[in-house]
Image 1 (cartoon, rainbow, N blue to C red):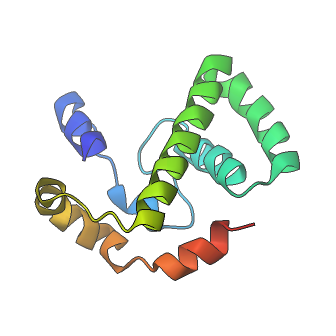
Image 2 (tube, rainbow, N blue to C red):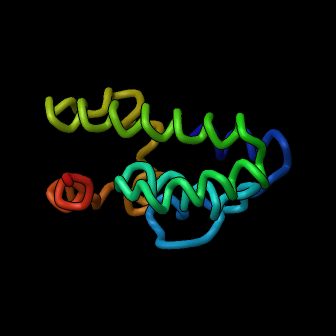
Length: 120
């Protein structure tokens, strides 16, 4: 939601489908690298992560690479807590994100598949 709103404000067109696709950058600067960095961290691919982090630091700067990993880790933790406790979306978030969740395929997300993917 915020990415789409900030894109409209700045005159950029971001593709929100990137969140459920296998590749691409979504129109975000270094988007493919951000995906690669995040997926290595969340997937526990530590050897890959060291190389990707070095590459990211060279392209984006050390602080941006660290910030990316911090945000990815925080969101992963928040999502796991919410999923494990069965916390549903609040009504306002559910209403305001309905179109985006359907458009990107998030509404069809299978939690069992997610657990199998990230439980290592």
